[in-house]
Image (cartoon, rainbow, N blue to C red; front, side, top):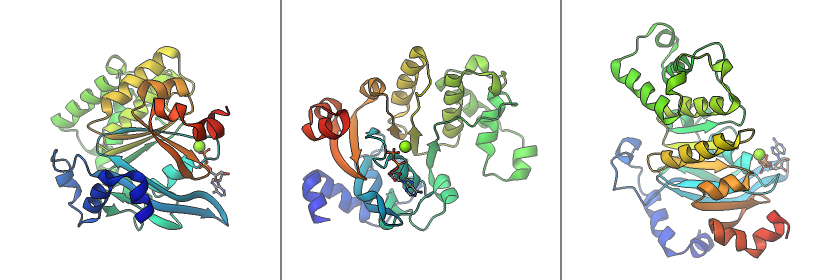
Length: 280
Ligand code: ADP
Ligand code: MG
């Protein structure tokens, strides 16, 4: 605790103390202002040991409410394992993960998702035989039970919510198209939309622009930027062009730990980063 606090400077010490005070409950989180500067998500001294191999090594990371954080690092740095720990797919061997002060350590993947952490995997997993609109409808109802999913009627506000998301993801004109016929890029946006209708606080996005056209990459950059503020985003991406487009604060992982953290220009000039990551 002490050396982490020294490393991250006095400002974060205050935030950390605020985060470890009794949990405010997620409802109060949405009442803007009171919690803006406290970390919405804290990864606190996490180690993940796979039979003696440390994929994550005493990693500490804090995300402010509404920020857009890029996570980069060479292959094997631990990026995917970090996402797995945050979402509860993999449990930490040591340390803890906290959402607004709530310890996620004892919760299942499903419970963590319900608390407001959404994850988009690299490969889109839309229902190809259903329309774009139906995909969003199904995603919205998921978790509400089979009966509601099959027979529940949508309220006016739910329909409006789907329309709102359709316009955010640039698919308003394609709402009646079968999802299976969409381009790869449009499928990726639809999948982001399927997360958005579940109103997550934190969105984890793994390599969102892999395989996209140049124009789609630009629109995805705009899309992710527009989602920050209301949502907290963690974007893992290899495409450095893309990272430069969207990056505010960048965290560089190396061998399961944070190698460097800061604005993109500072990261690019960091000799440690150049050595292990950029290879120069
Ligand atoms: P990245 O996503 O940054 O490329 P990963 O998180 O996938 O890195 O992997 C980090 C390291 O942990 C790698 O060396 C990988 O081989 C290892 N690893 C990941 N998952 C497992 C597992 N289930 N068992 C053993 N080793 C694993
Ligand atoms: Mg990976």
